[in-house]
Amino acid sequence: GNSVTQMEGPVTLSEEAFLTINCTYTATGYPSLFWYVQYPGEGLQLLLKATKADDKGSNKGFEATYRKETTSFHLEKGSVQVSDSAVYFCALSDRNTGNQFYFGTGTSLTVIP
Amino acid sequence: EPEVTQTPSHQVTQMGQEVILRCVPISNHLYFYWYRQILGQKVEFLVSFYNNEISEKSEIFDDQFSVERPDGSNFTLKIRSTKLEDSAMYFCASVEGGYYEQYFGPGTRLTVT
Image (cartoon, rainbow over all chains, first blue to last red):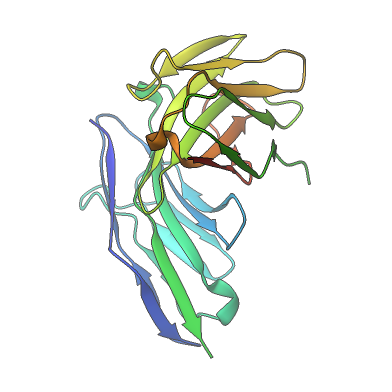
């Protein structure tokens, strides 16, 4: 079946530090992969996506590359800011299963000045 | 920018009571979804809805749950007789077409006492 595994949190970083949040997936078909972000008190917002192998999604300085060989979609940012403090969710959708989303458990990031 | 809205933002109810959670999807979207997130756990798929009928549902979506699109704008989730374990954040999502990213609402926090 389909599933997503994310690294456990919480993660606390100093401003301007490098961020990596690991995400691996299991899928029966050829999924699309997503990172969503949830700021305190808000809903889930799409951060970036990749729809096929070797695609790189990027937005707001965040990047993730769809790696089919390692079934991974790790989120990275070179220099985090306090405003990046949020919960980050890795997710996949698979045409073979009607496009419902499968989410990871979420990783809470706190960036301190 | 168009967005998905949900009401209420927080609902407190007693065990055994019926609740209706409301969502207004983005106006030109055709596919609608409900997810829930129990505190500290994954975001879980409940049900998808297209062309005025359920297209998929998870094992969580038992006979206590129902969905409806009563008019051209609202999309509702009803829980007939709430249980303590229904306490969660409920997210509505909508999609323009079948295989694009889902747009999520801010969520309704349901507390069953």
